Length: 117
Image (cartoon, rainbow, N blue to C red; front, side):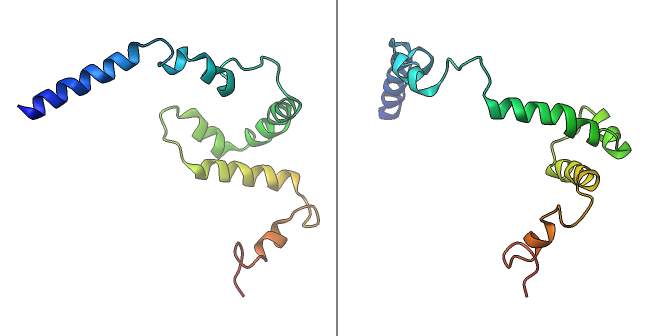
């Protein structure tokens, strides 16, 4: 009996809180003013640069690879991080032609990241 009374009082309490004006997060003006619900429609400089780089460099370079094209055709595939690693490998292979331009050797020589000596 006590459990039933406790359950009923919890349900009444929770449903009444959701109906109070301002308690619902989408109607709370103070929360919306700091959370950025109404975002600026104007994109920032870095976002514009990133968007143009993805459109003009990344996508054309990566889409040339036949294995990546075949993987992208399958819409029902699950998300795997390895796809992005493969795409990065294709992009770096085409754009970093010398080891002087790449920091791969420096990063690999770091004791935590690369080979432990």
